Amino acid sequence: MVSGLQAFVPEIRSPLVSILLSSLRSPIMRRRARERLGISSPMLEAPLSAVPLARYVALFEELAVHHGDPLLGAHLGMSQTAADALGPLGFLLLALPTMGQGLQAITTHIGTWQTGTTVALNSSQDEASWTYRIDDPAIWPRRQDAEYTLATMCMALRSRLNTPWRPLEVHFEHEEPACAPTLRTLFRAPIRFGQSCNRLVLNPAELDLPHDTPFACFIPYVEEYLRVLAPLQTAPPDIATQVRNAVRGALSHREVSLDWVARTLQLSPRSLQRHLAAADTSLRKITQEIRQSEAAALLETGNRRRADIAHALGYADHTALWRAVRSWATFPPHAAGKKR
Image 1 (spheres, rainbow, N blue to C red):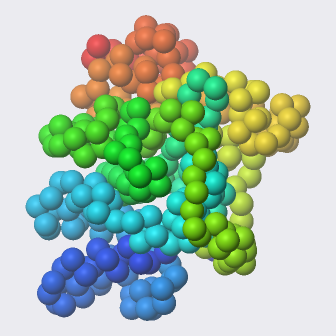
Image 2 (image 1 turned 45 degrees about the vertical axis):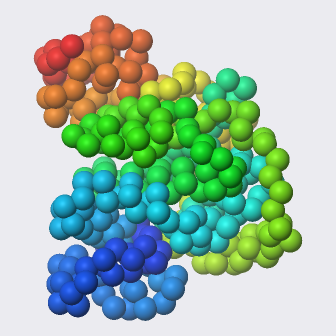
């Protein structure tokens, strides 16, 4: 408890948890897995009940080891429909008139399905991307969830377009696994690892492609259902948190400017500055804090090239990263000199 208020615990709806547990054929093994991870029967009994996100992620990682399948998340994601994975959100992804509207619906309503998670659709005339990241860095490792989520989205978009569609690139925040070539074959796209978030890089022209569906008449009812469906957590993130999430998701692939962040949050630049000033911070300060924390985490592993780390943090090259690290009073300067 903090100041008499219940601490925020990120959650996820339970259908996928039930699917994962059912892959354990022995009832005894299912019971032991549930007990070990603290997943109680009431969490799974109702179709839309919730499970703590950290326990779901841990279960996913554990089952990948149990089944001897390091690509369990990707394989499962490629085999599921959007409705299986996302329920009513999956229906909107497939049924709305354009791909962009479908992806934006996931962003708008994600809080009814999963909390403690940043999801964003970023688009301009030259580039577009759909990003996904669990906010709590303590929920780690989380590779299976990341690969499952992007594989599910990839298959949903292929189904929607009725073509062997593929993204321009796929980005993952975890390190490159030994089975990366197989993963590239599944996505049919180049994959970058060790990025700031998990991301599908898209052709912006595809976002506006028209799509005819016989289910368009149901869209208003599903949207109303999502509006009345109680969010898993009712408190929206404050402006400073929203800015941090936007910056974290954009560092590796675009310049972060006040105008861009304001447009992303649907605020005027002046209004955004006022909100940040009231929180005793600024866009520059937030960007530096994120770069510093991300650099510490990436450099700690000791097996990343400085050039790759610089790119993930939005620097032109490893020299620019080194200069920045030298200017951070609380960061050991020698940390930037591990690898080129």
